[in-house]
Amino acid sequence: MANSLVDIHPTIKRPRLSFSQLWNMSFGFFGIQFGFALQNANVSRIFQTLGADINNIAFLWIAAPVTGLLVQPIIGYISDRTWHPWWGRRRPFFFIGAVLSSIALFLMPNSSVLWMAAVLLWVLDASINISMEPFRAFVGDKLPPSQRTTGFAMQTFFIGLGAVIASLLPYFFTNYLGFSNTAAEGVIPDSVKYSFYIGGAVFLVAVLWTVFTTKEFPPEDIKKWEQEKLQTEGLFNGFKEIVTGIGTMPKTMLQLAVVQFFTWLAFFSMWIYTTSGVAQNAYGTNDTTSKNFQDAGDWVGIMFMVYNGTSALAAFLLPIVASKTSRRFTHMFCLIIGGLGLISIFFITSPMMLLLPMIAVGLAWASTLTMPYAILAGALPANKMGFYMGVFNFFIVIPQIVAAAILGFFINTFFDNQAIYALVVGGVSMVIAGFLNFIVKDNHNDSAEQIVDDLMEFEQRPISNV
Image 1 (cartoon, rainbow, N blue to C red):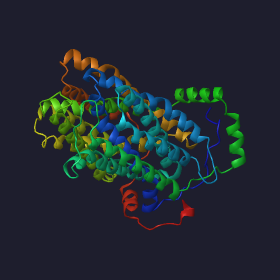
Image 2: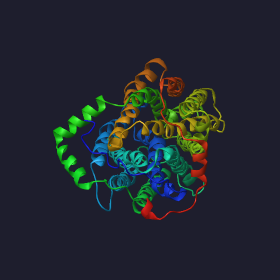
Image 3: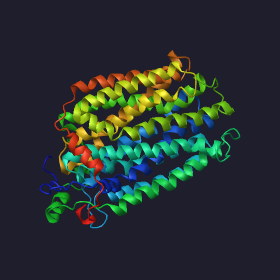
């Protein structure tokens, strides 16, 4: 299994890329997160507007993790075995996913019944995953080990920036452009509709920017690579390689998997229940047709904007902190702080004060999008980078499936349908994830000097060097 495909670039010395080259190769994540943030902040609101009971929201959200569980390892496996002289290896999947995601974003706010919105969530999440999974492998493909933390930090910056703007849109449309944030029963407000329309356009344009400004390394020996690829083609061989690969994961990947489980259980709880929890706890309503509920939905967008904005600002600070301490210590500290922030939402009833814990959550989010991937990239074989990045997604989606399956039951049975308690459960889970970093072994840590050089280097190198 280990030698079933020749290493795509075993002897190529990857050049250190300039700031602008890192910018171009990461800019597509701005669009991806634009769509992802609109989904996270508004889908529960859409479901409830279309008549979903609060006990069923978590189950309806199960589409997101299940599609990731199925799509990411398959796309990773296929992209490892893809090469085109112009399109490269990962960029065809960036493009296909962007087109499909844009269509789904235009259709989602026009859902007229609950089942339609649920189906479109499946389509949207599958499409986002087609684009997103190869972006993680892209960093491992193109950057030398000394730049990978910076590369993932650049992605985190664009994730935060895209999510800030996307999360703000419904509030902006309502309070500055005069669009209504209320509508007849069972109808999605115009402020949400137009936010999704803009999201669809931004998603496509941002991904196309990366596709057209970035090139990829070709296989060093194209004939040998094609021969090896032919030997592993076919449905049975592909399935066999995937199963075998899962069974032979690097030890570091297994250690990170435990941390990821508790981390993503926390984030998924937050995404599902913040709107209903804040509506109940700070706005005093469960009535989805009331202005208070829709105002709560708009304010959750602001809260999510704050945590994503914090993430964008922290993206380049955390690698420097990690270089002075370690990546696993930095990740541990950020997760514990984020978990405590999530728990504190239970005690806050002032909408404005709810922004403070989101700063703590933003630190945890920035670290989650940077440190595990930087640690993992150094432990993976180059010829299976896409596949293992896809498999790593298992440990993101499995806790989300668990959350979708059990949170509704627990909220109904033990907490009298008070959604705010789901955020407390999520906070405790995130604190546990932080302490579990003690079991993770990191084989490489970037130096502070290398990271600062990356952040200060603006000289544009010729595109042929990319």
